[in-house]
Length: 107
Length: 260
Length: 116
Ligand code: SF4
Ligand code: FES
Image (cartoon, rainbow over all chains, first blue to last red; front, side, top):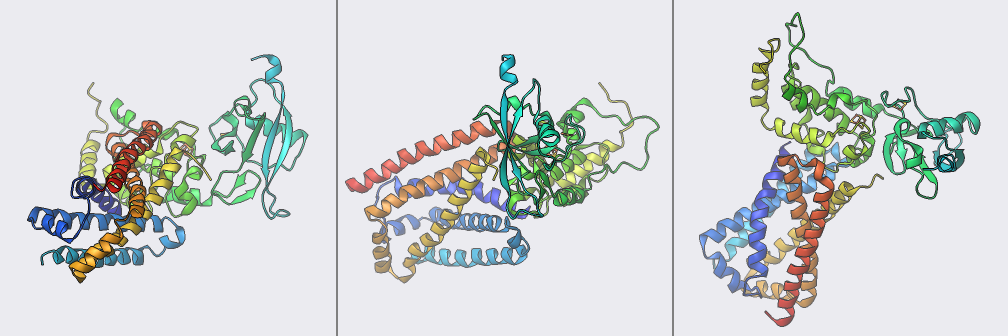
């Protein structure tokens, strides 16, 4: 049930964040993304918070989803504890890496 | 429909498998002369008595209440005894019949339903009544009866279970039939173990494993709605304590008349 | 195999979902170039903003839009008990995804080929 709840909540969060992300990255000028463009955007704290939350929810959603897909197979279902921990670790590692990237635009 | 039309000869294509001689199932055609009102089960009887005694299938009541004759007819799971053959032979004058999918085939249309019953028993399908049984009947309001959505009409035919793609991948999943029964007991005002049941269905192999594919609704020959039952259990499982308390409160007044 | 609109929606959901997971990690890696400095970042981003990648982007948009609308459909069914409308909701999702992909994808291509 925990996976199910994580999946639902992160899905609702993503509906908001992903819409924002898609509109601002693809349909609002400037259309060519470069370091300066991202830096300008990330200089406001609001954008930083939005991007951090977005990163977290998308990782949770992706790994909860992959976990569900994999454990649907009976052979994998028997190892679901190990798979769950592996997913958690991937989320943490990817989150640290992504957060570091967001931080790199501080220069 | 003219008399001629209902009495024409049609092809019944049956998936045959005899574990003693066959490695793989194969299809075999039979010609059957229809009579008005003939069902698929009647056609199978006709073949078994007059053409080929080795055709094997389960049946008992032949009026849609025992649940033995569920099979895969023209790509859909349903009861052979309540399906008129005339509706199924529109394409090429042929009807294709096979065993329930995703289950081990024992012979022809007979499948091994062990996992079906094992999962069923896991949700404790029986009623766990309160300690003090009233002298007269338990009282339920009309709303409480309506909330059960006729779930008690389930005949355990397995049509829903074997239409479910998740069951096809993972036999550890409880399955629509067991969850429908859990729903029936959880919503029943007389049942004293809703918390325990909600605990069982919220495990990794319970309601969270349902991916809302809806095959069970389309398959059920009784017109029941296991998916809705699962959605309801999902909601209740997330507020288990509150629901348990409300139910305990309700049980104090079980043998009082319902205020109209 | 037991096919139905629900089965198709489930397959599409899984395929688009797994594709998006793969894309997500590629995306993290591309943007992660920022950790190695401005020059590396700009080079790597220029590489993925060529017209060819813009075509991929339209496919990506289709996957995102379908996956999102399908999710909205499931949320609606869960919170508003809409199992009886399963078929119409499925077709609504398909048609809406097609429209959004064509309009949104068209815009991406127009922007890409006219230089914005
Ligand atoms: S819910 Fe319907 S399809 Fe499933 S076992 Fe009961 S009667 Fe058969
Ligand atoms: S024979 Fe009993 S349900 Fe068909």
